[in-house]
Amino acid sequence: MVALISGGAKGIGKSLVEKFVKAGYKVAFCYNKSEEDAAILCKNINGNSELNCIGIKCDVRDYESVKNFVEQAVKIFGGIDVVVNNAGIANYDLLMDLKVSEWRNIMSTNLDSVFYMCRESIPYMLDKGGSIINISSVWGVYGAACEVAYSASKAGMIGLTKALAQEIGSSKITVNCIAAGAVNTDMNKCHSNETLAEIKEKTPLGRIGEPQEVADIAVFLASEKANFITGQVIEVSGGFR
Image (cartoon, rainbow, N blue to C red; front, top):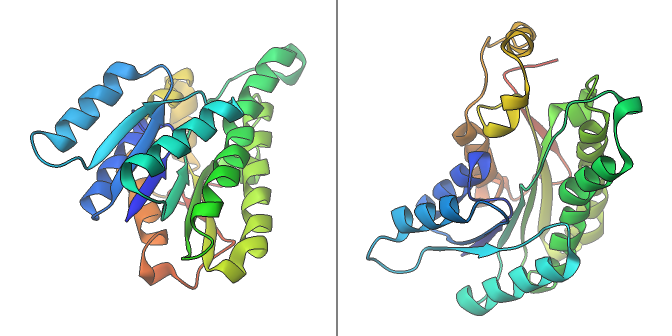
């Protein structure tokens, strides 16, 4: 079994790589700027044993770069069974202060990349089935002030998930979305302690999530236990509203 994971060097992506390898997958993940983190992750997983994961540099905003990532992964591991679209960035700004270039960068990273990854990966799954798992956010479900671009990109990911699930269900490919709440990653370092405290107050479980808690659900959605689940948005958020 082979899993492709975008944005796999740090945070939720790192946990995704670790959890899928533990579940018996060969994992190809991409990174852009986190080359050192990617190298350390691969070294820790592979050690002196067989090749269980590989990190490939890729700018997910660029179609040709994504195409190259997918082709390299298939060449190395022989196919694709699971795709996890995890790469993403955020910003924190009022809409009227948001630069057009920042808007485009967020949309390209968070949403265009999902289209590119799916477009290039699906042909390898059509004959045998598979799973596509998109890592969205509760902000894509409920929205968040000062995060309009991020919320819009993650909402777009949810729409893509639901439509694609209908489009390729006959090929036994499931497509689901995880709407993560606030998770303990570098991305949330843009929030002040006060903001994080407010998020915890709005979360019934009263805490920030951990990357592995999101990764565990992704592995489940890729398993045979989830064969009859598709087109769904599963919130891993501690009950955040």
